[in-house]
Image 1 (cartoon, each protein chain N blue to C red):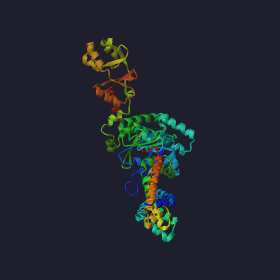
Image 2: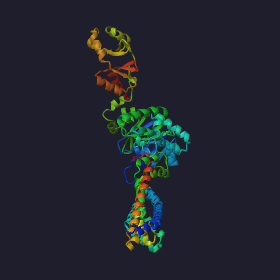
Image 3: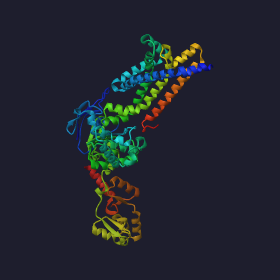
Image 4: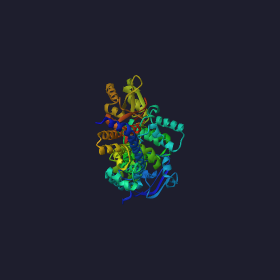
Length: 373
Length: 213
């Protein structure tokens, strides 16, 4: 747990404090994202936690212990630190870079070697192949992975990350974010993560701290921040697509309706009755192989009539061949797919299995409900 | 061209002159490195950063004093011989080494130092494990510059009895013996080239493999 109590930082020669009377707590095992425009004090705050910068006033406690009681070097050896520029030592191999902190801790050689291989595997690099490489031989994404591995080498309970994925291209960034989320799910480290990208904050954070001009403007879960921005600054910072961003906090499975009605292609003329019996508003039509070929909705039936020619129905079904999403897709992406396909309904699948249906109305209702919370 | 004289210069005079010259250069550079390297390191420490401007200016000033003048200036204080020569040459050899040490350490990326500090390395560990290894190619380039310079200025040592290849040159000038001049100057040039190439090779070898060469 990291506790900041009335912490301020005034840089010499500046009148305005970089961080002004900040109090906040980062709970054990949580990822707290500090976000805000440049110069808002988020990096300064991060760097005060491992004493790269000393506080002007106030107290910082790690697990209840004042950090000023620890020797700065010792303190930093127990806190993982990742920066945007990575800072791999260019004259040391990948393995030597990862081994730095274990070496400072005085680990025996064989233990270090084992740990290095373990970490390389964890970050998706082949130990045999990459151990002896030098940083200049790696891609940007690989370098950043090695940077993260290096920070995790002695399995520190706390990690500080200053725009760790800021310098890689968007595709690699997305990939690194996903990988890190997956790791964090198991590691449950206490993480402070600085970024200026609100989308990254929403994606990575259990809690988000929004900074402006050295002050903490709002601190809460992504949902709290998105649904109840405390002031216009936060609102502006989140952007006009605030409600769409709320949709990125939820998955299709959170909203999907689970009443499943299926019918074979030959049963098309009778689907209305079948749907009525089951109380379903979507009926999936299966092809001969038992796979979902598409679906029919009440709206189709209302438009074309109960007894529409089965050719019309078949056309509708065929037009929906692509209108399916996986359960773990974000609501935002489901909405995007609806807009792309110009449809208000999507079938929901888990792998190859049909598990429900979702409509534009469901998403709209969910968004307005969450916004109201 | 007098072959007997040439033979005399090459066979009887050159070996001793060359070895004295080499000794003079090696000792001088040893002393210069021993002073300039720590000095350069100290001047890059945050506490002494302000001093570095002053020290560098003083050294720049010293460097502008002609080699002959420095050698002449030490004579009244330290007398004649190899020792005063080495003192004079060491002073002249300091600047390139100190300057390159400072430049080399400053050239180490701030991100690398930030990361090293953030991982818990002490300032001493950062100096020995990060700054010096990364600055080493530039420092060695300074030592090379200094070495070549000392080889050439070292020929002036003959004027205060320091010996070396300068003896051949001075004798040649006094007696109008072209052969002595040729041997002295030629060996001086050769020595400079050989030492320069040797150090260039060392520089190449110790450049950390991760740094593009």
